[in-house]
View: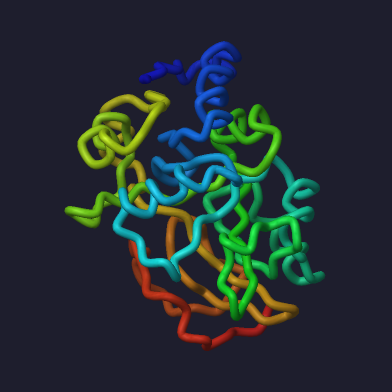
Amino acid sequence: MRLQIDRWGAPSPRKVEAAVEVLHKGGVAAYPTDSIYALGCAIEARDAIERIYRAKGMHKNQRLALICPDLSTASEFGIFSQTAFRIAQRIFPGPYTLVVPATRAVPKTLTDSKRRTVGIRITSHPVAQALAKGLGRPLLTSSAIAPDTGEPCHDAEEMLAAFGKHIDVLVDYDDSDEDERDHAPNIPSTVIAIDGDDITLIRRGQGSLEGIIDAPDEEPVAEAAPPSGKRRSAR
């Protein structure tokens, strides 16, 4: 199913409802976020989770994040220290993933057995926000990085080329003209882990690090290795 949503005004409730119905039934959705396109499913949809892992060629130690509509919902699934909450208020909604200790509401199958953490996203994109709100629970999500090329997908056609056989509903959201697309940042979210007052940069992405963490001044990268364990103190 392909749903065309115009960028002008709020997303069509009827089309959002159609996509949410697919998610309720355990399907895999492809949709835009404030960074790049993403693949997602309902938090309890085990078959859909496995399909996303296969589609991206992900390793078992790589985890999906949760798109939440707001911080209140996010606090049901993640444990926010004072530092984490302060930074969350600053960066959300926006192109960031914040990794914090997971609460018991997060299924054990979605976390590492040794270290129970969860990635939280609160996106500013109207479509991703509408899907999370319509679903009534967090939307499991993963950046759409084409496994064959390693390149992020930033529109519906690229999603079809990379993941067409793996998705049940595609939200086609033309949010820019051709010139804007050519100059748009085509990189995924910045991923930051916070445990107490310690902050670790996991992946440098679209979200700025200024005032959040001390990090070398270099270009953003599309993907990064798992965290080495080196932590930087909160500023």
